[in-house]
Each structure stands twice: as structure tokens, then as C-alpha cells.
Length: 165
Image (spheres, rainbow, N blue to C red):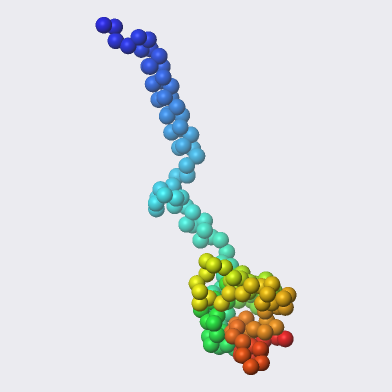
């Protein structure tokens, strides 16, 4: 019995397989960063790189230190637990030096719909509107103060002060 016929083909294939694996390991050693796997399945050096990015968000407390009147109004309204920068965007530059940056005037016709456009995926108790039917092109702040958006039923005006008409 002579064993397998043409066994040298199998040895060549096995040799090729080993060569491919070795080539893969060599390329991988150059491509995969040295800190990969240090703290789990990602680059350990990424933590330092992300920490080096400039801070963009100031946080609710930074807004509250200067805008106490708005914070008091907001605390009584439906948006009490919505942080300022969720609507106004990152304002660390403004918080550190108010003269360095003036926040842009928000377009409530676009901004409010981001959260309050009617959707079956939202909880039933969450205030939702069909923008075309509800607003008719009129900005939300015409009837609502964005910081305390309830509407007084008898006049149709916002309960909180500051609702521009």
C-alpha cells in the first residue's frame, strides 16, 4: 500500500496555508496598534486621544449660573429635565467667555419638531403634534415659551413669561 497518491500536493497546500497565516500575522503586527486590547476590545490609546479633544459642552450648571430667570421658568415647565445644550447646542465657549460667542437665535419651527413631531414610536403621554396641522408655518414660540411650553387654555398664550408673539 503506497498511501495517498500524489501526497506532495497536500504538503504544498499545507505549506501555502502556513505561509498565508505567517504573512497575515506579520501584516497584523504592523497594522494593529500596540495599545489594542489593553482595556478591552479597542485601542487603549484612544482614551487619551479623546480626552485631549477640547470641551464643547458646558453643562447645565454653567447655564444656570448666569441665566437664573430662565432656569426658574424651565424648572416649573415640561422641559424641566431637558438640559439647555440639548436645544441650544454646545456652548462651552460662551460659558467661559460670553463675549467670545453669541448663541444663535433658534428656529423653533424646526427645533421643536425634532422631539415633538407625531410618531407611533413615542410614548402615548408624550406631547406630539402634526406640524402641518398644528403650526401652519407659525413658529412655536408664538404660542409657547420654549422653556415652559404649556398653553393657557383661556387665552392661548404661554403660561410662562417670555413667549414672543
